[in-house]
Length: 305
Image (tube, rainbow, N blue to C red):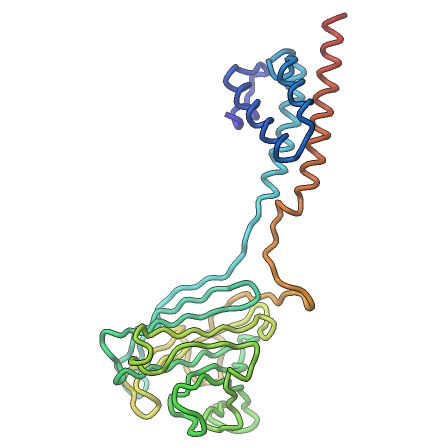
C-alpha cells in the first residue's frame, strides 16, 4: 500500500492508503525516537486525513525522498564463492578422482574445502592435494600441499608451504622434494589447514586450506591438483581448471578470485550502510516532519481565513 501511495497519479488519497501511510509514519517515529506529540498532532488534526490537494502532493514527495534513503541504506555484501568439481586427466595413469571444490571468502581470508570421494576408496584410502597460488596469472608464486611422499624430511600428510622459483633449478621451478623449500603451515600465522591424509583418520575425506588475503593479491589466481595413493602409488589424478597443465610453471589458466586486504591496525568487519546512515536518516525524518507541520499549519490558517 505504501508503494501505491507513493506512485499514485491521483492527488487525492484513498482511505486505505491513509491507513497504510499512518502505520508507516508511526514506525518511522518510533525507530528514530522522534517526538510522539508531533505524530499524535498530525494524525489527530487532519494532516493524514486527506485534506488539501497541495498538502498531499508535498507529503508524497517528502515520504518518497525518505523511502529512497532507506533503499540506498540497505547493506550489501560482495563475497567470492565458487563451487565445482575437479576433472580427471591422463597423467601417469588414465583413471582419476572427482573431488568437489568449494571456495569462499570469510572476510579477510579465503577458504578452500576439498571433498574427496570415499565410497570408491581410491589410492588405498590415501588422499593428497596441492593448491597452487599465483598473484599475476603468469607464473605460480607458491603451493600448499599435504606431503604425499615428495619430501622425505616430513611425515606423509604434513601440510606444507612451498614457494616457486625457476631460477634455482627444481622441477619446472618447484622444489617440493627439498626440505629447505618446505615449511609446515603450523609455523605460518597466515595459513591454516585441516584434514588427515588417510581415510581411516579422515572418514569424510574433507580438507580445508585458509589463507589471509593480505598475503595474496587482489585479485589473485588459483588452481588445484589432486592425487590418491601417494606420490609413488597413483590411484587417480584430477585437477582444476581442466585446461591447466600441472607443474608447467604457467598460471594463465588459473581461476581468478578477489581477496582485498583489510586496513592495517584494525579489525575487518562488513560495512553496514544502514548503521552508517542511521543518524542522517533520523535527521532527515525530523526535517520532513517539520516541513509537514509547516505545510499543515499554513493550510489550516488559509481555511480559517
